[in-house]
Every structure is written in structure tokens, then in C-alpha cells.
View 1 (cartoon, helix red, strand yellow):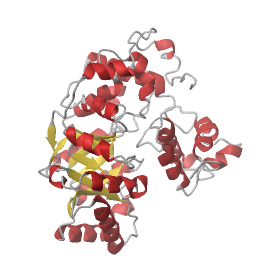
View 2 (cartoon, rainbow, N blue to C red):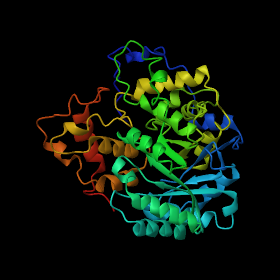
View 3 (cartoon, one colour):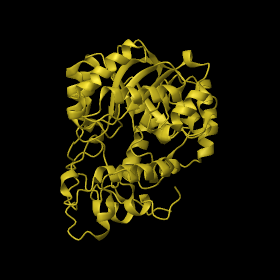
Length: 414
């Protein structure tokens, strides 16, 4: 059992001061699910100017392996937008979607992604796309994304635009997107909007991404609003006709931490989704779904665009419990602090995948793919990163004592 999280709010939030010390909202996960009853997608929203209307809560397939029954169940619930990538579960994600959706292609929208550098050729990009088409067993992909963009040089690669134009002419893709959640994402989004070559953006967006919301219940504390530009850029993208899809909406996904505070069938995940969907600039969200019961919980928030007082209390409680260890997307303020070149934000993000998402294998695979990992933190004496986080995260503790120990491959099955 994990030790109780200390809070970054300088002792004010300790003992439940933010919401009251007694956790009176007690319920079990099974009781929450039983209270919800049958659910279906309640709303389909226009995706920018594409003409597509997609389920407001949609299926993220980053962790999908050989589970076609989950895809079939998502269809039964009315989900019509499935988000994958060539790199997800080593291609198994796309393969499983292809098998599960065989004969049902006209009922769904499919997306995929390729990770293209500043030097990838148009021919290599086309080869990546054709591999995805084969695995998905389809002739076309509705939205094809340049994946995990955090360097504007990747968007300045003219080969990408040659490739996407050719792929459109050949009927292999309908629309072009970019995805990202790194510290230089704002710069990349600004470039993409100005370039007018992208139809959809997929970005990390949650209740902690908007300073106006977080500061409403952390008033009086000196927080640096690293992410304050994202709402502005989302508004600019919408004005340009781009579709906006949100990911990482659970702010670390420590769902089990919230079980003692949920009541009346209302869950933290639903509260987080309602907050995202309450923004009219966001068309939909994607979320990984690991089971039918979890799918029912998530889809129960469909059609909701109002955040209740109970929702707000759950979101506040989540902040109290988790903000002292949560590495914020779009920050990267610590990036230059390590003389060993450890990509701190990437390491901590993979740690979140392992501990909070329950995606151990994916986290270890992505950690192993880093050009530098946190091994240097094991013997570090200078701790140059100690005060590098504007949110007060104890970086040396998180990277040295947790991340590398959890994520390195030594002694673990392949």
C-alpha cells in the first residue's frame, strides 16, 4: 500500500483542510457501477470542420492488445471513434481493431499515428501509413496524426506535407492531425494553426490544465501557471476550424485513490470528463478502457456538460491527494536542470503510466526506448534538479527511488 501522499500546498491541505477532514463520501466501486445501470453514448459532436460527428467519449487504444470483445462492446455502447497508432502495443492495437471492426468499417471513424522526425522522407511516411492500413484491414484512415510532436522542426519537414497530400489524393487518409503533450507543444500548435495544413489536434487537457480552475481553490498560493497558454491556443485552433480532442483527462489516473470519496454512483472519472466536456471548444475526449465495467463507468458521463458541486469536490480532493507527485504535461521546466541529460519529464510520465495507469508493460517499453534513462540518478550526488520543479515535486526522490527501480528491464520478463 502506498504511503499517504504529502501535499504541495505547504501544509494547508494536510488533514483534509481543503474539503474537511472527514472522508464521508464512502462507497465501493461495485456499488458505484451498480448505481449507474445501462449506459450508452448520449452525444455526438462535430469534429472541427471535418464533417465527422464523433462520440463525445471515445475509445483510446494505446493499451489494446488481443481484446476484440472490448472493441465490440464499445460499439454496442455507441462509441464510433477509435484512436490508435502504429506504435501502440507493437502494432497489436491496430491489428485487434482491424479484426474486431471487420465488416463494420462504415459504422466507425478510425485514426492512427506515425512518429516522423525532421528528416523522415515522404516515402518512409507512406510506408508507415500503409503498414497501419494493413493492420487495420481498411483502405483509408479518417484522421492520420503526426504523433507526439514536441519539436517544431518536425512540423517544418516539407516531406510531411508532400506525403499527406499524396495520401489524400490516393484516398488513404481523409484528414491530417497532430498530437502532443510536451513542454514545447504550444509553439508546435501555433505553427500548425498558421500552416493551415492540419484538421485535428489531440492534446493533453484536464481540469488542472486551466489555471482559472485550479487557482479557484488554491487561491493564495504562489503557483506558476505553466499551462496558461493552452486554453488560448485551443480557442485559436477552433476559430481556424480545427477539431480538438482531449487526452490524459484524468490527470494521472489515480482512480483507486478516489474510491473512498465517491457516492451516489458518481465517480472521479466522470467528474473529470464532465469538466473537459463542459468546455465548448473541446469536441471529444479519448480514454483507454480496460474492461466492460470501466467502459460503463466512463460512458455514463456522455452527454454531460455541467460540472456539479459534487464533481468539483471530487476534483479538489484529487488535487489534495495527488498534486505533490504529479508531473504536469506541457511543463518541462526541469528539462535543462540535469547535467547528465536525463529527460526528467519523460521518465516521470512513464512512471505515471506504470503506477497510475496500470500500464506496466507499455511504461517499461517506452522507458527502455529512451536514449537516456534515470540510471544516472542512482548515483547522483549534485541533485541539480532538486529545486527545478515550479510545483515543488521532489524530483530526485521520484527519479532515483521510484522511476528507475520500477521501469528498468533488469530481471523482468520481456
